[in-house]
Image (cartoon, rainbow, N blue to C red; front, side):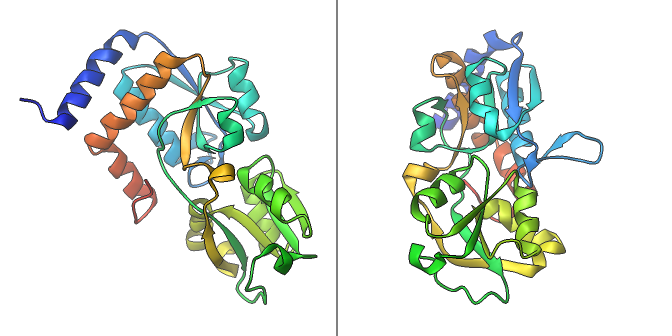
Length: 253
């Protein structure tokens, strides 16, 4: 008799057998290390990229990874320029109104980051009044800051590497960022040695949802089911844990 886990994987394998000839186009930003970035050869690398490829292997479907600008990511999906987004997209209430999401494939809180010598120790809206608060364009962090921190001087950067550099160069006093993404910069780069996490983790379901999910068009129910089945499969067979351990010394799901 099959165990429940084995039955899930076996059943999923039967479902995807019919999908082998479909090429799934997956959008990834390529500017959010360690989750997704372009290496020196211009090839996509990172946690999101490896998860996307593992999911395609589990679905027995050929995939094409498409680099696409973050601020146009959902419109591109809705225009059928690709079939799915695997790019650390938080499942916010606003996004759920436009697209469908799979189950969570990782979870990360948002947090404030300052220079190590910064006098800023408290992060209520009144504490950051008049301070230069950096965020990345079209992110949940930007929406959160615009709503709650209107008394701060909000500085919007085009992408995360520019955000980090802005803090390191003193162009802003504090930044608001995804904790796992910033963890890589703080611990694995010389520039990141300037700065540190401050304050408590922020988990607001309205803005940050229940973690990161794979976005698809709402009417693409079959593909949504395939991705959810593939997530179950790579979780059960150990593939997810191997990818997790390659990028983080702790579980992120």
